[in-house]
Length: 496
Image (cartoon, rainbow, N blue to C red; front, side):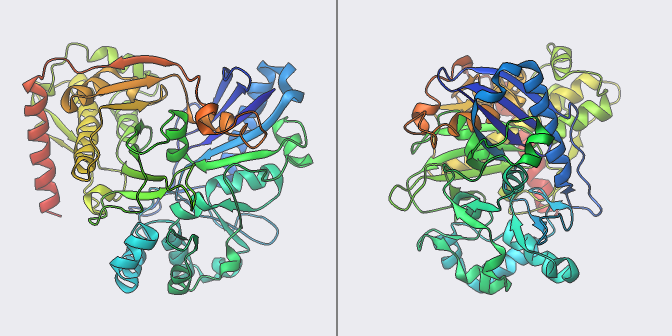
């Protein structure tokens, strides 16, 4: 039997077809091939049309079935991974009311800050494990005040993965882990936070039915079957936010284990068995896929908004979208560490949580016309993102997380030897690259509710390693380049 997994990103949608018996991936499809557009009407805003996600799901499904037609009637389950913290609104006819406000939109920061002050830091950090910040609940509060006509039409609010599940099954449901990432969940009481709903004057009826992330959440409808090519009646049995799902895919399930990803945003994700978080609010804590009232498993997430988005910008604006990332990598083979003094700050994609929600913008510093070329900009861009990861991991180290190795997938920035080696050399830890994607992990996890696997660990047990980037001798060039970069960042922060 087979399973199909979807990874609903803000750049593209991936679908993977997996053999549940062997754990092997038959095929993977991605759409669109270039980055999916994000609409920004104002600075700090970021919206997408959920219908475009659905069209991409349909496209990738048909692509896989065209390649492997014999599997169509043997697909036993569907898993969904999705971009976290987004807000999708539908009316009683299940129609989209307005574009989705996605994860990197920062318009709701004042609403989250106000809630944090009025509810109190003790309640927020002890019960929600976060400030309400810029997450789904605060985004909904923004709609309530600024778009009352749209707010009055709301039947249900959803996260992006909930929306795709609805399109597949016609059922509107969510999960505890999903509500935790929206800052709706009270971890101490193990229920939806009444205080958050009361503070924002949100009617509890707007929240969908809550189901476990591994459970039968509906089956593919007749209309979904026609749109995707999938057989009717396939159960959707797994759903989780992309970072928790990415950690699962890399078999990061127990306290002390760490995963990272370098997609549109960059993330370092560690697992803890404690209901605690960073008092300075530089990291966020959400329910991991295996969290329960009885077994605490909290994902400590440190996000870097300006990561792959910066590298994509360099590719588009400095070179050309016709150039592959591998071609860009080959161009910088002979560019030295530090890019001859050229430095790039990558924080140009909205407010940065690990910088206390500052919107610093990106910077290219010390550009010398007689010295630097496009290739130096590529290297400086990659190093800038790597240094942002190092800066963030130092925050986790302050909280007692000291990685001996970091596991990553093979479908993002960590494919770059320059990027991975910079982090490995500087932190003195291994970067272990595994042959998996979020779509693979979602497909495998969907087999748990069907009884193909006993638990998450068994579901991902056979994931192979591709390569390891190991630190060599400590190169002072990395330390020197990072310290200069860090000084640039501190100056930028001071001036904001």
